[in-house]
Image 1 (tube, helix red, strand yellow):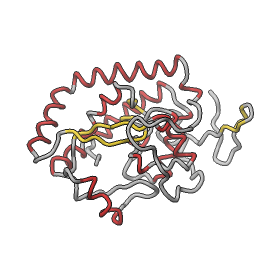
Image 2 (cartoon, one colour):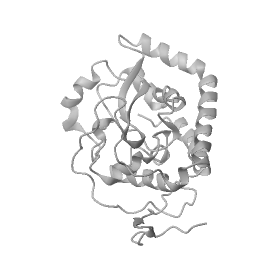
Image 3 (cartoon, rainbow, N blue to C red):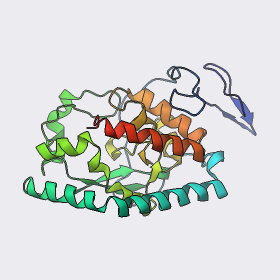
Image 4 (tube, rainbow, N blue to C red):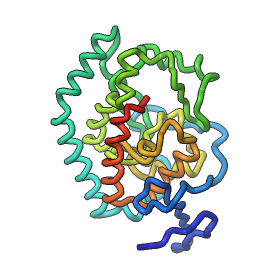
Length: 267
């Protein structure tokens, strides 16, 4: 097994470029202590993301060495098989969630939002609607109350969330339609969190590094206490995943997602 450098250890020269490996966070298969210390300064502002679904890719670097060729094919096969089985097994739950949203008030059952995907491609992520129909229009008026750092926006008691939406979010049921994003190849079961386009700073090389793989339905942020993570912590966890991917790591993260969801701590 290749040893991981500790914080502050120079990277390994590969050709004409320098490759740096962050220290393994606590959730990783290696599990060697506390998460790494901060790398670089948090972004000052949000850059200009591509506009519109299907935008051309941006320069985010080559795919990770561990996710090329047959290993990439194995990850995709894992996504298709598991996502397909989950869609069939959870079909009654899909219907229950859809009915609950429909009866909760006017508005569509599903919510669609542009998210930044692999190589900077913008795609539409699908969720069960958990907010009022005018939620996007009200966002600007709530910016001053933001509880997250960096380019992220988060309110634990967001007034736009409906009563049914709070229940869906607590158990992460609003995310279920993203299984179809996985089957379409826009997302993976495991990967970095897919962020809205306005939360991605493409001027930040760390943010671009997250885009070297497909975003995930679950991932390091989900099993590491997503509400407690700062923006820098989230990026460090995601970059470690990108640079050190293995199928065993995906399996571990999927298994650790189950108790995280059953705790009902989503939102």
